[in-house]
Each structure stands twice: as C-alpha cells, then as structure tokens.
Amino acid sequence: MTWGEPTIDFRIDYKNPEMIQRLIIMAFFLISGYARAQFQVKSLPIQAEIVQEDESSFLDGPSILKLKDYFVWGGSVVKGNDNKYHMIFALWESGPGTDKFTNSWVLEGKIGYAVSDFPDREFEFKKIILKGTRYDGDTSSWDAQMVHNPHLKEFNGKYYLYYIGGKDHGQAAAPELDKRSRVQQSQQIGGFEFDSFEDLLAGNFQRINDPLLSPRTRVKSTNVLFPSPDGTKPKPDNLIVVNPSVTYNPHTKEYMLFFKGNIYEPYWKGVHGVATGPTPLGPFTPRDETIFDVKMPDGSMASTEDPYVWYSSKYDSFFAIVKDFTGAVGGVEKALALLNSKNGIEWTPSDIPLFLKREVQLKNGQILPMDRMERPQLLLSQDGIPQVLYSAGAIDNVNPKNDGSSFNMQIPLKVEEHN
Image (cartoon, rainbow, N blue to C red; front, side):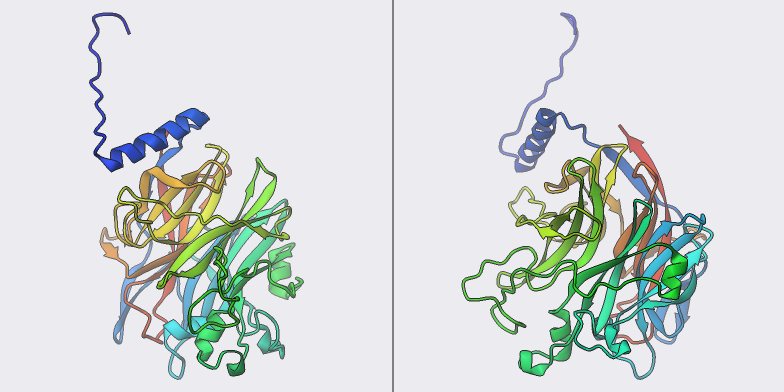
C-alpha cells in the first residue's frame, strides 16, 4: 500500500460472541500456518422416481438400490481393479410377519454385496455376504445376533470391511432389559481383510473372532448391561462403539478408526471418539477426547452423528461429513454438515459448513425432501475430492413400518473448489 490509498475500516464488535469465535479460529490457523480448505458441494439430479405402494412412498430407479422384501440401508463403495464399482451395504428382511424397522435393524441386520459398471447407478445385488454367527450355530460370538453399518476401504492393495455387530447375552444378564436393548447395548466394531471381491463372494476370507474396538466404560444410571463400577467416568467409547469410519493419517503413519458411543447426562446423547492403530486392523487404542463436538457461540454443543471421515492430499487436511441434528453447524436442521481438521482430532466447521440439505433432486427437476438421509459415505477422487454420495434414504418415517420402504441412494456430486 502507498500513502494516500484508501484503507479498510475493520472494527471488531467485542460484544458479538460469534465474531470473537471466528476471529479466534482464524488466528489459530494463521499462527499454525494452516491454509483452510474450502469447497462447496452441490448434488446433481438422480435417476429415480417416486413410487407409491399401499401407505408408503419410496424411490426406485437406476440411482436407487432397493430390494423386494428387504429394508436397504447404508452402503459403502470402492472402485476395484476390474474398473467396476463394488458396494457393501446393510439390509434385513421386511414384510408380513417381520418386526418394525426400529427393532428389526437391531435384531436382524445383515450385510450384502452389489456391483455396477457405474459409480452412481445400476448396482446389481449379488448376495448376502455376512450374517450373525447364530446362522452357523454359534450364539456365543460377539456378533452372533446381527451385523450392520458396513464401511469398505482399500489400503495397500487389500480390501477391508468394517462393521458393527451385537449379541444377546440373555435375560439373566440384565433382567430389566428386553432383547432389543440387550443386543443394542452389546454393539461393537469388527472387521476383516480380503484380497478380492471374488474371494468375498466365495466366502474366502477369515472372519476375526474378536471385535476391533470395544467400550472401555459402561456408565448409565439404570437399565444397563454389565455396568461399570459406581463413580466411573464415561469415556467416548461408553456402552457401545458403532458407526465406524477409517482413514490413514500420512503424518503419524497411523490408521484412525472413528466411532460413536453413548453418554447419559442424564439424558442420552451420542458422542464420538477416535482410536488409532499401526495397521488397518489395529490393534486400535482409543483416545480420551470427544471429537466432532463443535462448541457454538452460545456455549452449547452441536449434536452430530454418522461421521464419514477422509484425508485429502489436495488440501493436506481431514474432512468429515456428519448428520447435523439441530442445524447448529451447517445452518440447516438435519442436513449434512462439513467439518475440517488438520490432525483428525481437533475439528471446526468448514468455511462452507453446509454439505447437503436433506433432499434430493430428481431428473424431472423436482426437489424431494427426505425423512431420512443417513449413514453417508463417499466415493473420492485420488486426491480426496468428493465425487458420489451414498446415503440411506426414506421418504416417510420408517420406524413403525415393516414394509421395506427404505433404500440406498447414489447421488453424483459437483464440487466447486475455492483455494
């Protein structure tokens, strides 16, 4: 600047907590030399149409994976060496004689496999590749009753399937709990390695007997399975560990397993943590910090769930998309919000924090609000830019239903980058 040029009048409102918070965040990143990554994501139209059947509406079409007589839920996709796109997804039986959604995912969850020549459409279901071990006569395994919420990754030429599982320890273990609660409170994270999808389809993989991550504390005032001693302070991995998301940290040379636990203070809230390990299958050591708990200007903590975490080499940064219950992060209630981190431990809202609203655009131009848009997972470019979103979906509230009206959506994305 030369003398005589106009200057900018930049005044700080010290009584505005939001402005002060933003200044602190900006100062942190300036001091650390970290250039915050910015990009904005827009969803493109999907090839789907609304179908009405009895009392339920659902989507069907090339961009939808929906199966007759099944609920279909979250899916995870990688591109294989055969240039095909391989999806591992959650499913379980529906229809007359089956339980309602809110119970049946806990008691009957299974994992299926589908494949496509395209990343965003025409996935063809092949078979169920994983069930609770009770189907093989083993009721004692940690994942005997159910398996659910798969997460598929490729590391160093090998494939890894992460999932949650649970078992029923029996009424004698917790007389005050029903079967659903006993199974739900037993949920842990497991995983295994396989060489090819041909091997996966043929069952040529070794299922690991023990979970990869289990809760360290079991704190809840009442109605709890195997409670911790009185006075125990709950860790993030309290009571359950679910919803795995795994990424590699090139700076620490560790694998990071992100998870959700349950805290009761005194009411339920989901909290998140991370465990680290030297290999894709661990052994994983959980840290004590809670993460994704974004503190807002009024002092409250934003409530989030269903994280999908990845590292972008383009930005040398970690990102996470989360379900934003209240809209406190992204500004829109129950939308998907975008978080940003340098180390995978300390997170802040991205400069453009709204990832996607809870809606989809159909080919005819209609914008369709969704009742459920959950368990988001991404297909990424080699440098970590989102290309396709895979999300469990439902137009109606499926909790009281047993009609299989949920599905998986494959949503192509357009990313506008701002450096």
